[in-house]
Length: 201
Image (cartoon, rainbow, N blue to C red; front, side):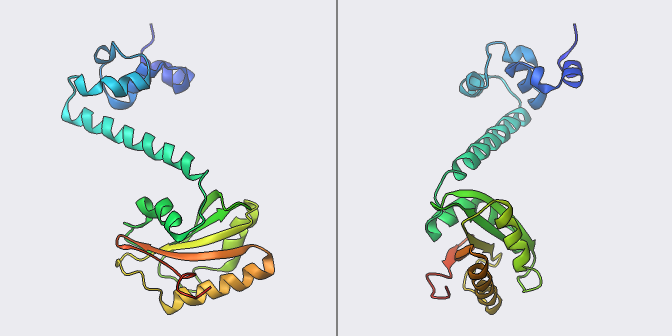
């Protein structure tokens, strides 16, 4: 009888039962999972299992990945209709970044999120954040409007002259393209600043 690894290689991991996939992923002997049939059962029973510290760490990492994947599904359905909502949407990923990143939150007619796209990495300048890259993503996703987001690794969220200039430029191009820039939100580990609330839009 073929082992788990052999069957996974020959037929793909989709051919494995839940317990077999868990055994392969976490490096846990299948006999320790003898009372588990599904991932849900595993989550309920794993605290009582005799696992090593490394195995427990792998389990926690798996649960974290599952949580984040679930969060992505929720994120895709939420309305980004306020800077607070935008901050909650991106903070876990962007607030702790060591470099500046510029992203756009693409929205439909009801301000529901239809996608988040990374445009650039590095200190913001007109050459790094070019409108054609922003609006290319918006057009590809058939976005009705969008919100610009970038992070400040320093923790300070006061907009710079460059931040303001880029906001104005995107606003102007958006008016021509018919894809409105609703806000530009600067995020950090300390919080966020909305350029719309600051009167720059």
